[in-house]
Image (tube, rainbow, N blue to C red):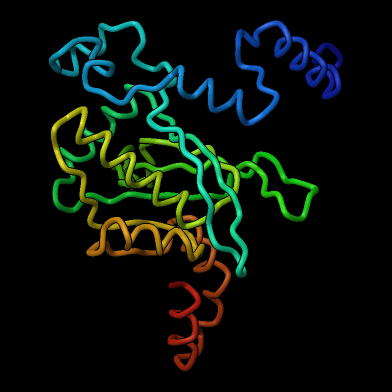
Length: 249
């Protein structure tokens, strides 16, 4: 069996070939082309989202043939302060019609206890230039638990994505603000999360509290689980409980 399976090198080469054959307008050589592509795929009105002037039910929506096609909610650029210097950032807020319906579903199920999660660890490119940041894909969605087959499982329901060059408070705020405003535009309902699960990045916290001042932030599930396993051996001594609690939080 192993003899007939393709090698890692063959898979890599095949991926390159398919990529060249299937580009179909996805190739971009500079920021101007990215911005131009983003503007061409904008979906920022209810008419564009629903394909018509009024909304419809989810069942009617599922009959549409473009429910999972990528849509661009916003294209933005600006500058942020970093150690006394003004540095540029540019990015797109992306989603799909299905993902925007995910927000509606989560909002209906969780109500005033709506819990969200965001993480910015998906770095797609690390720049070799000291003064130029690489590209990062940041996700935002609902956090919830599901009981299945005798177990309670942690789940993430995707909403929107931020494709950005240079992580900063301003970029995260753009993700939260655009997601909220577009949800209101499409579904005529305000989006006010109660709880946010985040990692330890400072500008995520700053952007969240700037957008939703009353939101409560907690450590993300993955970090919490990792820290609990790392420090649980210290709980043999009662004197260590306060120390471990601080590390976990």
